[in-house]
Figure 1 (cartoon, rainbow, N blue to C red):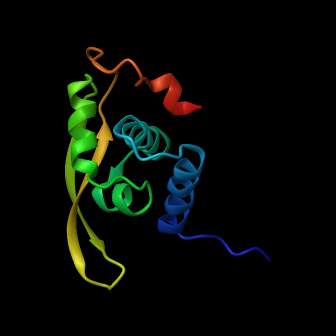
Figure 2: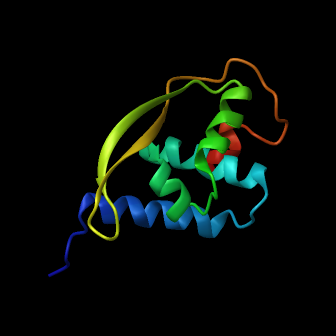
Amino acid sequence: MSQQLDPADQRAEVLSEIRRVMPGNDSATQRNRMLRGMLRLGSVTTYEGSRLLDCYDPRARIYELRLAGYRIKTTMQARLTESGTLRYVGAYALEGSPTYPLFDDLNSENALE
């Protein structure tokens, strides 16, 4: 009998895979990891972005995505940290297609690869 993962573990697996297939620490790579995570899972929290997507400051990457024309909604969600403390974190979700391009290396098609 196979054991089914809980939703948080499933999300962690998807985000960890994104990090593995998109190595690097430059801001363009971090933006694309955040974008791919939102496209694959519907949303990415600041906690997931920093811990699982290896983005030092996910808020900065979201800001840059918004500058690139991506419409991203932020909501606050209560999440337990690794130490069991309840924290409120930002959860980012795409609200539609980009409105104008700013970064040539950033697009939805590349994020789905």
